[in-house]
Image: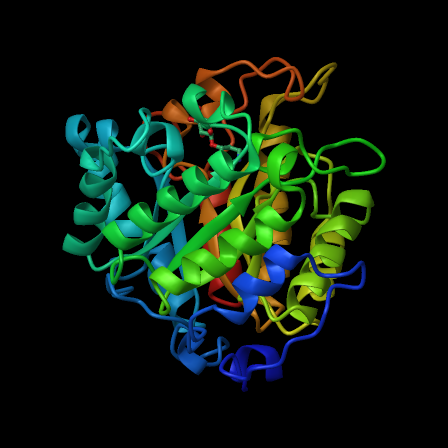
Length: 389
Ligand code: XIL
């Protein structure tokens, strides 16, 4: 199967204006943008993995999640932590065996890479990239512009020029550093809030530059690394609602203005009860109908919630069904190019080591491997869906 026109003809040059009117700034950056990526031009189902796979995507032992995903032309990834890779041999061995896509859980964000203006530190991010390449894994970059993990010095900037300069220099330096190694960047993360109007989040970027910061970031990233795929990434868009509408609207505006965006990531941090695979499939279709790719970018299915009464075997069984259902939504869409779990083992899951009001009390144990590295029922159900069983 071939990709739809948007993905197949990323080189086409056509400039449409934002429905709301293109600002002078967007107009100039759009006119000056570099040639778009080829996107690899490959089909997903059964074909080669789409997009540049500089780091490999050969990773994954036989019988692994990666091998099963690869047979359908997809990547199966995990968020990795440099500290665990260096200290925990079991973690490292399972990461190398099961996955062919690596994303840094923290290490490539703005705070760890440029905590002080113009002082860059790529040590930990490089450790993850090196591990990925040593094991034949492709690498996803996460993330360039986000309202969180933004250093204090960026938050203190008080003029549009200062924020624009900081954002552009950060994108230039980080994307250049990893150029040729990163298959895909999450360029902008979580731009919209959780209010009924899904408003743009309060951030130095939106506050100083307005919504055009998003287009500017994508154009900038493409100019630095024309071969990397560029994705917008968010949570709470896995079912119908104002945030999904806002993201669809954003994508339509970006495409109409010929801004280089290749896809949308659905984080998929979900509970035992919501959303359904049918809902996720429908949400993804709204994006792929526009000609973009999609992925499941950060899936975890938490066991705990406020008032939970079901016993643990029931919950683990339900978790397995939920993984199968949601991963199945990706498998059912030829433009869903990868599935990434947000961690390797329950032991280190962000939902187990931190408390969040929205998640309620744990234990959440939301991943595919237990804290002692046993394969959970969710591992088996996920593997079966990847294998088409
Ligand atoms: C989280 C990490 O898992 C934590 O370790 C860190 O403290 C905060 O960030 N959406 C995202 C991810 O895009 O970057 C977040 O990762 C989880 C939610």
